[in-house]
Amino acid sequence: MSFLNTSVKSVYTYLLIIAVIGINVASIKWHTRIDLTAEKRFTLSNATKQLLKKIDQPIVIDVLLKGSYPSGFKKLASSTEDILLEYKEIAGNQLQFRFVAPDELLTTGNSSYADTIASMGLYPINLTSQLKEGQQQQNVYPFAILHYQDKLFPIELYKGTTPLINFQELNSAEAMLEYNLSNAIALAIQKSKPLVGFAIGNGEPMDIRVFDLAENSLKRTYDLQLINLVSQSYIPNEFKSIIIVKPTLSFTDAEKLKIDQYIMNGGKVLFFIDKLNAEMDSLQMKNEVIAYDRDLNVNDLLFKYGVRINSSLVMDLQCDYLPFDVNGNGQYDFLPWNYFPVLESSNNHPINKNLGYVVARFANAIDTVGEPDIKKTILLHSSLNGRVMATPALISGKENVTAPEDEKYKTANIPVAVLLEGKFRSLFANRLTNDLADSLQKAAQVLVTNCIEENKILVVSDGDIVMNAVVKGNQPLPMGENPYTYGTQRAFPFANKAFLMNALDYMINENGLSEAKGKDFVVRLLDNKRINDSKLYWQLLNIGLPILIVLFFAFIFLLIRKKKYTM
Image (cartoon, rainbow, N blue to C red; front, side, top):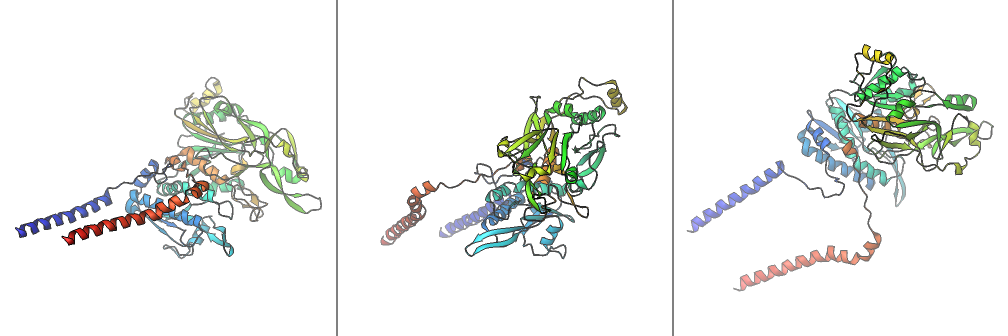
């Protein structure tokens, strides 16, 4: 009988061991987690999940945040590790990651990670942190490098605008981690680059002033080709988007029809329009320039879609700097130039989400008009201290000899960039002339009077926003950089390039990552008064209660032992 009981116990033991092993194996393959955070901080977007499932060859991500850094960047490193672990849950062995120090050598070559990042046009932050011994400066590389096949793709994890730690920017960087990582993966595994057109034929710049736009910004992500609005009979639908940058010659009705029909057939257009003729070259030569309307003949087209670019200049007390000869003795000093407004965003859209300041040059004011069914989102605007100046107007470099009259700068949030979304109606729905009808027939096209689907148009009232300055030696600067302050302590990293890339990414939106970009992490601060009032309660709860529980179970255990062995 005792032998039988022993056998039964052995069977139960083996079954228990097998069950435990089975549960552990099953939990590795089938498991889930519950995200209790209000903003779903630890939940990946559906677009990211679908993207990770498309990875067909191994991807390795090296994160350059290994080392001793201030707490803010340690937290960023920890958050990066957390989200990459989430990625591995879906991608499996197709995705690997590791944390490396910037001075380590790449496994694929003899160069260090720091040198590799620099060759990609990214540079460390010279971080200033406060210690007990005083201030400490160190280079921080908040970047990652994605390896896919034989290609390297840089990932910017943090975009700081000052040498001091900005916890708000660090929090924004955490919110943007999923988008930045997913966007790099999407860029790496895409089979072909989306086709984007650069419109020419109406005096658009074709020189070194668009070098950064064409060669550095767009070429890595898009297949950029020229579209001649004069000679080409129509804009092919193969173009995912076209960009119109600073035209200087009037558009004919035939050219507007080509743009209009491209939009009606689902094409996305980004307008960067300088309505006024006001150039720095004239100001530098004569120390004055007259700003007047270029007469581009696009007012009716843009009005039909829902906006109007006014013939007025936006001026702002929040502006960029230029060198001026204040005393007339050849000694120059940097003074604010109110015609170069530093634009803000309301952080109200994936395009301007966590976007820094954008600098403009002789920008115009925009009004949203008509078309109630079209959604209009203001992406860039002036600060609280702006003003609008009517034109034609004489702009003189002598204006900065005296300080601006602040009481004139009381207009807030003057729109400079507007996104239009909806089903647009054709400008030519009821005004197609015989000549225009013939041009459509020759191109084997049929007039489309309404958008075939929901569409998007971006209108920016300054072409210089996406152009780059040129310094001595015919060297182009990065987009948005001031040629007079570049490389000095006055230099400021404006977000012009980020604005352009965000806009194009949203307009084309092939990967659907806007949901990931729309995330926002809320910093919930502790209530100091409530902490002080309930300090003793929480100390007893967190320290005293666990001790009491241990003592209680110890007392119960002693009672059981005493009862067992006294019998």
